[in-house]
Image 1 (tube, rainbow, N blue to C red):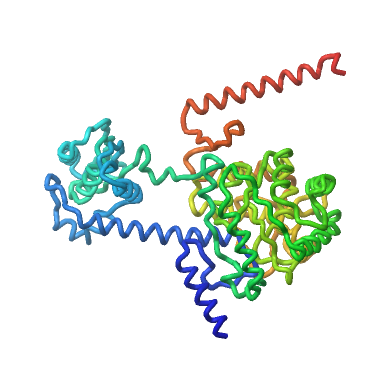
Image 2 (image 1 turned 120 degrees about the horizontal axis):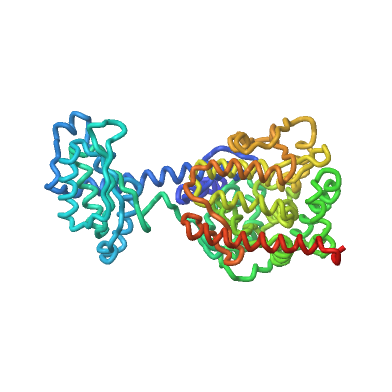
Length: 534
């Protein structure tokens, strides 16, 4: 009992120290990408609030520009010069952090736009301009308009150029003026918190390996390998190999043990028996190809390198080793580059037909066949592209869509419901349940699917059925187009980079590329119509 208590204490301490950690007490039968996203949202929100609060406390200690008068009576009547009035917004926290990098960063010139609400009209504006002059700022653009809320007030947009440190001082000074109702910074260049970082090239995925610690055998007493020291050591060994991996490296070769290969064989033979009746045609077609090439056999676990090469030939997808359960944002981001982050460890031998988290058996048997199908590969990549720069709430919705499609999706095939979800095709118990008369089957509609509560204690009570992969993609594209992200992205297969389509020049370049492709297609059609082709 003492050993168990010590292990539980270590588990709790480890969770506290990790930004993305175990689920803080709620039990779960298996790992859920949706719950990962929700937990990640909560942690990010709490962390962000802490950073903002600390920055606001520092800001409140700073001096105020005497050129801008402060009406203490009016502020006290309104209740406060609160953190909201005298503190920093997210944009300003980013600016403050940039300043903290050193003296050179302080003096770096920064362009920014300020939106001000002027209580006293032009009188307020003259005070603002005088203050900008005092801080040696340059006004690059100025425009005003009547306020939509109060015609007696003016809204002003002022674009300035000044050093970062003086810009921050100016903002804090303006915030405390009784002649201004509000002051908002709209960052330009690299200070905008509303233009979030996300990977632009596959090499950036080296920075997208944040792990969820759910179900790790060292931490979770409910994990099948919790009491197995040899298994825990093996998991750690394979995890360290993945941690050392960098973009451009060869995928590490894992020498699987006899026990691990036997576990694979048991699951492989079960899938082989159930596949012809229950799996979709696309899955069966690629599974057969993998058998013909000797990659899928019952006697040994395929290496990620040979599977990655197979995928590259068919859809351009490739694999990257992962040390464990990635956060939802990091995992989805990799799909944008047609990269699937796959574990290399194997589930515990005592539970060959069930694992509380994805292992290489789930990923090889469940995901790989359909990643070699062009239609499904395109759908997977589009989920990844939609996740880049998405808000936390949208990541939750995308994760839920991914969960009810890529992991637990069903589709129609000549009027018969078949499975295509990796979580179904690698777990025969839930596969048989999903195709029985017990659960409710609903047509796939992304807006509805995205908010469907996920059941992690038992089998799903609800599954979503796609009419076809093409129909699923079309519906997903229409739904994603309404997301709040203020820009569009595309993957350039020639450069391997994600491009943000935020300028006329980029759009014109893309149109030129598309016109060239259309020309090639038209020429091919015309040649096929020639008599000599018949």
